[in-house]
Image (cartoon, rainbow, N blue to C red; front, top):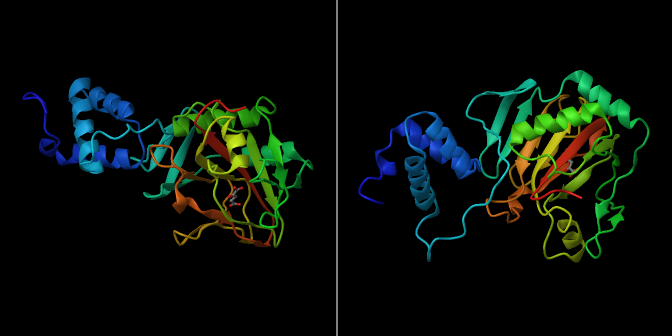
Length: 287
Ligand SMILES: O=C(O)CCC(=O)C(=O)O
């Protein structure tokens, strides 16, 4: 610290909480610098120095300065409602580590219906990426059916893409097209990871097309009468589908390393039909 730098410990408590919470949420230090400087209370240089001190305090003494955190998508949950350009979203719960956030009112009922109608009957048995070569293969652990909406194919999908980009502070070009999953009674997706395993040759082929899957949005397009929750076995958490809600979780840490705590799945539907749209945010442009 230079003689003229503010000490993190001397900051008002509300600023200390703000910094630590945003770091825990995976916010980019530069965005936080902008936020602090924008308040008019700190210069950008002072804000940067304070955030660096907080990072050092959080990460503890190491052999030297470790690698800097990498850019991550993030959702700003400092308020209970998030105002987006075209919609106000509700924050329903936040689990801090691993980060899992349930959001309400992300899609209107009409948007959910329009996406389902757009896909009509184009579903086929769901597949997974084979470990050996990355080919799409049927797997007994994923018994649902799936359909894709390619970018540019439907106005409603483009609108939702823009909304998710604003919500996650991420370039939507760095994301996969919407993948719909339809589950009838007994159908499920047993627990698995969304991150791609660099140790698997098949996954490396997918990593080459846009890098790691940093974050997942699961958009619930309909209510389900019974069953069909999204489960996180390591966290003791089950989230039930509600039309228009979105579940978000980070698949990696701030260095883009896969997080084994993010094991999750779709529990069997007991009655009714469950339809979701997955949106995976990648490190780089996809495709
Ligand atoms: O069905 C769900 O709730 C989760 C789906 C899922 O994990 C996936 O498609 O990767």
